[in-house]
Image (cartoon, rainbow, N blue to C red; front, side, top):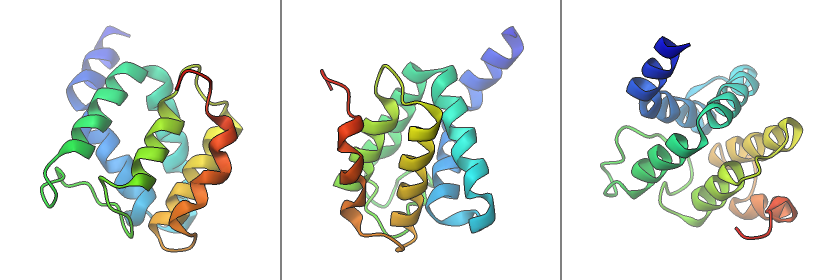
Length: 129
């Protein structure tokens, strides 16, 4: 258990970046559900660390986003920030809700949904967010 925690702390930011890049553009469509589940487990396992890593990735200078590939969206734009707020909220989204939000995010990044499509999930935002 301790070794997995140390490994996640050491490589978590890279894992998150690769997972986001996979959702956004890199993974074939048939693997997106696996990327979603990987990200859900990562957020569930260490929400505070994921929030820090995601903030670091999003706050990187434009063009120097630490290798983050975001497809058709701006990594520092409204869609990315909406996605981050939805998936990082506490209490956490349920598995089905997370799946819907992350899958829609993937489709937005791939140009299959409009950039404001995450707005349909605004009812999932918990009070105090």
